[in-house]
Amino acid sequence: MTQTRRAALAGMGALALAACGRRLPYAAPAAAAEGTLPVTPNPGWDAWVAGFRSRALADGIGAGTFDSAFRAAGFTPGVVERDRNQTESRRTFEEYLAITADDARVAEGRAKLAQHGATLAAIEQRYGVPAHVTCAIWGIESRYGTRLGAIPVISSTSTLAFDGRRGAFYESQCLAALRILQAGDTTPARMTGSWAGAMGHTQFIPTTYLAYAVDFTGDGRRDIWGPDPTDALASAAAYLGQMGWQRGRDWGLEVRADGVAEGTREAAEWVALGVRAAQGQMPSSGPATLLRPQGAAGPAFLLTQNFTVIGRYNNSQNYKLAVGYLSDRLRGFGPLVAGFGPDADGLTQADRVRLQQRLAALGYDTGGADGVIGARSEAAISAWQSAHGLPVTGRPSRDLLARL
Figure 1: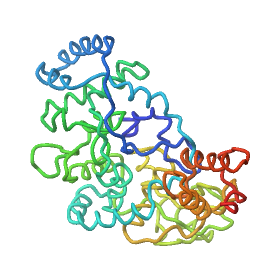
Figure 2: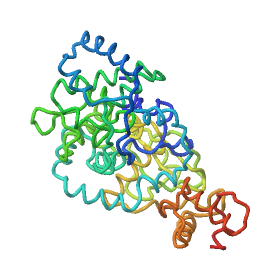
Figure 3: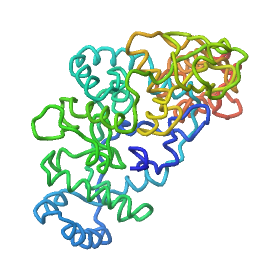
Figure 4: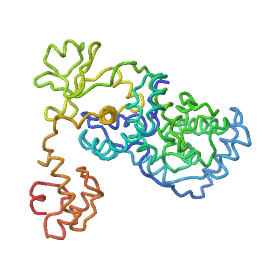
């Protein structure tokens, strides 16, 4: 397998997604809170299903499996709409952390790490991936199993296969989903996921599930959907292990590197140049890469080969750094030592939070006070500006904060 685990979802390019300093298009983790989407009659989809049935049966899928899977499936136009609108707004690394690794998610993750500590330790022993890293992936992908996605995978993958933009890819996902059902790992009713077919606690697409999911509990099923997350967590660790995770090495760490240029050097060379750990310990050997994802004003990180391995799960700089950062918070590290400084509007994250809080206190819906100025915050700003006879820009500013 040469693609990332979810090369699928937003079409490879973007899932460089969660990235960081590259300012790649932002896309929420696959298990974003999305409910079921309505199905609508579509004769074209019906005809596609009839043709696909012949191809699937010729490829080893039993007629009973196919018919049972498609009995409750249907053309889902909302899936196509989401596929057509993947070029989301851009998020900085600071904003991405506020979305995926905020204090609430840290607290939830520490509780989950304690609750499932013995299981995660056994998974780490077998596959070499630290428990806090596996738990962090779980936290970002599905908020520790609370956002698994509710769209039937057969409906989503068949709709996208019929739609044709990436028809061959999604037909392969639909066929893989049928193989999962035929193997008895789950049922059509339980096989739900994101709009693009990512499934379970750790959001595997069907082909990746077939290749890498494991039955860690030994009950004869690779169950990544149920209330027990064991198989899903083990599958994520098994996948990273197969992708080359180096046992005994971390993903990287935040460092103090004033005046030191980015690049890749041996660990000892970075130490000789004056690079020091902000928290934790510097790697003792091996190549490491110095990265400043948000420029000189923000934090710096020294990254090992395992950072690249995380990218096989989702090759987005922001995503990889968020997994690393959240994993460190889960094992007891504090927040980043370096701040980010003011943004292009002259506001710090604390300023943006205050702005959202003040708008909310006046009755405007900002969608929360996380310091991320998204569409709802911009709409709230626009509404306030309009109500007060000001030019409607929808943009935050220090003047706006002072007026509120």
